[in-house]
Length: 413
Image (cartoon, rainbow, N blue to C red):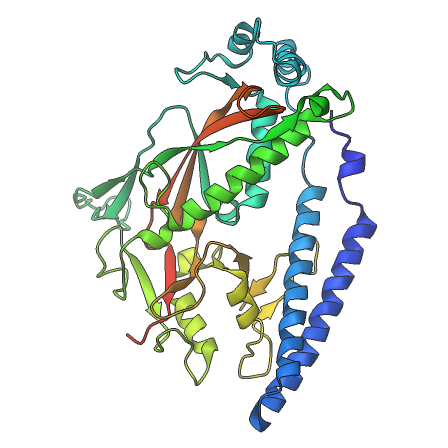
């Protein structure tokens, strides 16, 4: 069992991280204000480099603080069904015999009792529920898009959702008034593409033989790291073939919700190919915000990569207030114009005609499907002296509400 007292950060560590972030942001603002004053007198390369360095420091410290908050609230790995003897028997058989020693005898029968599942045609064994749920929770922490999207657990290879396109008549009537007949509503079926994601972490047999080596925690961290990297790319740029369909790969148009074809996303242009308008970038970001319907706006977030966050961090509104603010309160994320701003490495850098900023209610707009029961094959032969653990997990994703996500396009028209 993981000792949470030694792995979870304490109040002092979090407070120190908050103080460090606050000081770093104040230093960044001071340097950036100097840069803005100096900009009318000629370029100061040293000052520009200082601002960029301080901005990177702020990003690093904000990320560190976010991880500390998440780790402080992370449940222990071995915290599921501890009183269930069949679950405990499965865990012991899986970790102590199969993972550490490669003993498969009786594992399939124990697995069937604990999980009501057999061995897939592709082979391998389902991981214990505690590990599966630990991977799931850590993926939420590590995968930016997953952390803000709607995640659905599925038990089959297919997931479909009916989207109401409207058309049903409704209204108010008195108790004795006649009711008008309602129109037949129009529905559209959406099915987020599903694929199999895999990871292949390795350990030495000496590591596995060490009684003090926490094999549960190690396996959870290794699989999470590999899965999160693949997921992060697919949820944004995936082509939908044996993988999720990323929200940037859908057709986009400048048309508003009432005129746009179902399944296409609206983009807002900056008016400058590859750049921001010369007048005031704030107006462009506000146009993006208010292109989203009020019903979706309250839970909306910005999604962009670190380079663009660093650039926008330098922007001020007409009253001299910085648009980006660090998250200094407990659990409070960084924000842009009052909305949560998350960094996703797979979002593109700003260039001509790129869709580099997303803003939307991803919980309403993007659905991720998870088929539980990560499966593992133990391979001690392919790459001696290492023991590989080939793990697979079925994951899908796609846009289910094209009105809930908007994109900023760096183009002239």
